[in-house]
Image (cartoon, rainbow, N blue to C red; front, side, top):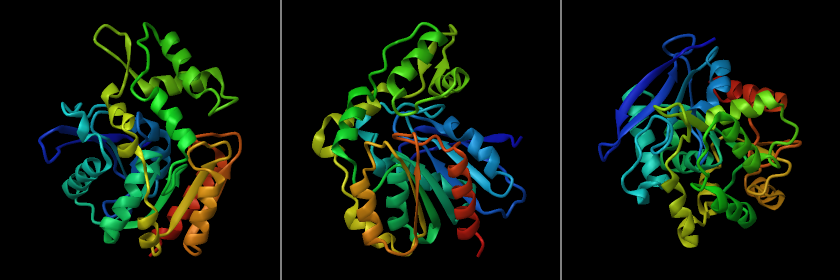
Length: 288
């Protein structure tokens, strides 16, 4: 099992931020950067990162306001441009000049923008259930729960809360898997009571429909030379079939697609077909 080291750094505004770094097999191993979703944190990638660390150096930050990274006193900073400033400082601090990116939901939006802003840094992108546009139905669902998790008093209540939020997204999971997801979503406080491991104010920018609307189609064409693997949950309400089809039409080459059965937004990336596709894709984009 690959052990992760801690890497602490400061954002441009001095906010203290955290990342996990899995060393990989050698100092010059290709780098994979894993970026989590809106209300998630770096622990979501622990199993995948340990798997990838056999071949790659894996960098997995807690985006500001999540996990061990400090909560921002100004919730208006919970925006992709600020997150990318943080990620750029992280990569510079680690001496990373090129990386492949695995981005889940919000992390995928970050990956696409970074691929346009600094194409020389990005060897390839895995988009986990996200594209240049978000389906309004799914965005409304996320607005309904982001930052609104009710307090819980025990791990049993935390597990029940997670199942209530994601039960239709991940049907058929075992009790053991639900408990694991809860422990990735919550962290015990000093009294041993689980607390959601993300600042509830992260959801506030979503309340402004104009600010929350995503239209990265003007950037999509600029990603023409960046290899991309688009993973879609078959039941996703964020990456619709229509959006994925347009992605394919407008990026005829360099785009691979995987649809994962029995998953909504987002696949967990522990599904066998996801692991096989990610392994194949990363091997191809890092072979040069």
